[in-house]
Every structure is written in structure tokens, then in C-alpha cells.
Length: 184
Image (cartoon, rainbow, N blue to C red; front, side, top):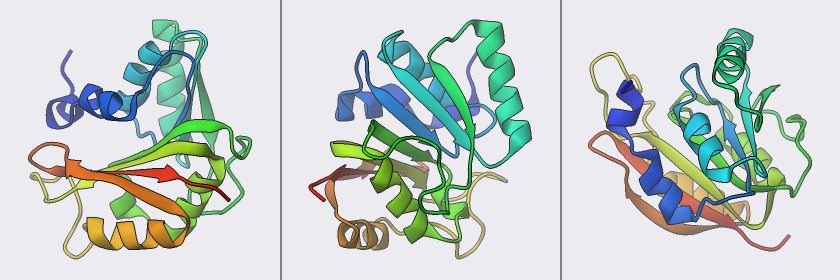
């Protein structure tokens, strides 16, 4: 089954760039109803890894839980939380290898708070990966004036103690910014 999200963005190319591998602890912040990154990542991290599917919409998390049960994933946990409230996601600080924001950042009102929260969750040298829209595709994507500017994003992230590793294209409609957490 091909999902439109997988056709637009190839998660495996991004996984390769960040070295996603067995045993890693990963959070998809704003996982969305399809969770197309979490289910693919769950296969890569295997039974010794953990994937946290985090969203503020309880019905979205119910959809994810249903798929977890149906497809027999033991390494995915759903978490209800507000991504824009620092210190509120119930995952231990400094415990994650990777945090993803996929097609979420353009919707956030408190982008800096969300970045701070992701940084809090990451281990030193962990990766924050932000994939977001560069332009609209029909009804999908940001409305006028709400697209994320990768340069502005990098400026804010750098001020918060994240180092830009790479800015790249993630297909015809998306960019990918990869940051690394350095020191305290």
C-alpha cells in the first residue's frame, strides 16, 4: 500500500543520513494519523529499540494504537502531549537518539518552545530532524504565510544549542533540516 506521504517523502533516505539503526530510541513529535515515519522506523530500530508516537490529538493516537495492535508492533508507544509546552512530554530528558517533526512545524504557534522541548529530550549528539513543506500540493501543506523558512529555523535552533548538520531537499515539496544536540 503506497501512502501519499511516502510517495512525497522517502523516510529511508532520511534514516540513512542520520544513521537510524537497531536499538535506537526515537520520538515522532506530531506523528499524525498515518504515522508513516514511526512504522518504518520501528522496523529499523527493531525489538531492542523504542519509538514514541507523540501527538496532541487523542483520536490520532487511537488510530495509531489500532494499527499497532493490528500489525503487532511491540516497540511503539503512543504518548499524548502538547509539543509546544516545554518539559511536558513524558519522556525522560536526554534519552532519545532522534526526534522527528514531519509536516508539523508549519502548524506550530510556539516553534521555539517545540525546539526547546525536542532538545531537552535528545541525548548529547542526538539528531533533531525537521521535514516540512516548501510549497503547497493541492489542499496539503501550509496556507499563505505559514511555510517554515529553513534559514530562520536554523537561526532559532542554533540559538537554543542545536548545531545544523545539513539542510537538504526531501522531495519536490519538502525540505529536511538535520540538527545535532551539542553539550549542555
